[in-house]
Length: 436
Image (cartoon, rainbow, N blue to C red):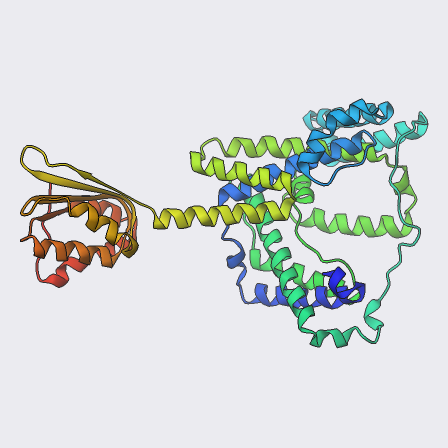
């Protein structure tokens, strides 16, 4: 967006996006962003965890991360071959060990101080006292805020259609990312946590509106901090508030204190969080059916090949394509007559008007005056047009059609549309035959 409109357009775009999010939340329309397959959500969690592990592993070695997850994974051997900072690697491994050991302690203090904080403080002290040659956090010289909305062109941009198009796109991106993140947290908690999606968008919209006034970056829900909070035992939203206030206080009052923190220690903690995230999600996908596991794997591969948001979008597209295939796919098997001269037609899937030519071609193989038994127990959806085709065929063949309505009834109890469709034969003035 910025390469099209320039930095001065950032404020209006974020402000409009925030107001749109407020409208979505207040009108309780967040449900439209929640139509996400559980396999895609689990794939997002695993993909996010792997992205964290692969990228932060390079930083833990004082190396620079690459553009994609796969690039980070493939370049790990190269990082060792080219030479690593052994001090950074050892300090990173020590940070992971401290965090893991602290999380296993049963002492009361272990519940007060989170493992990540303890590990980073010890790593910072060790790097300073031992004069280790490792990279540390670097902050910009000026942490002030520039109020760009005072520029004369700020409010003039609100009449630019391109600004509104960018704002609508941003609204969709950040709202979808937030709701998917929230749903992922619900999935990871095995149903123990429930969130108010509309309230999340209202709060985020208010934040984006304020951020837009100072030409700040857009706000979106992110999985990393949320997972870190949950792994530390957080059960309320208070840690998010404390996190924000501590960042503000540290940036204003103690900006140089942060520069004592080794980046390898921070990266090691993120690797630790990523591993725990992947391990937790793997337990929840064991009972997934095969097709859902394939969808999950495709989502993870897409995330590693591109980025988190693009990978999730690809997963959603594949999930939609899969459902469209299921809605349009029909398997019809015509079994040749038995010793009593009875044909059997078994249907599986969704029978719609588009399948009528195919069904008629099968039924043309039936000899005149032969009896046809149609089984619907595996039908997920039955179009009225298909039912009418069967009834017309029955009239043309002197009522030699027998439909197994008893088995169809069990399917109709799970498919309301099918139950309504089964009323069609009564329009012809007779009760359909029942085959036991």
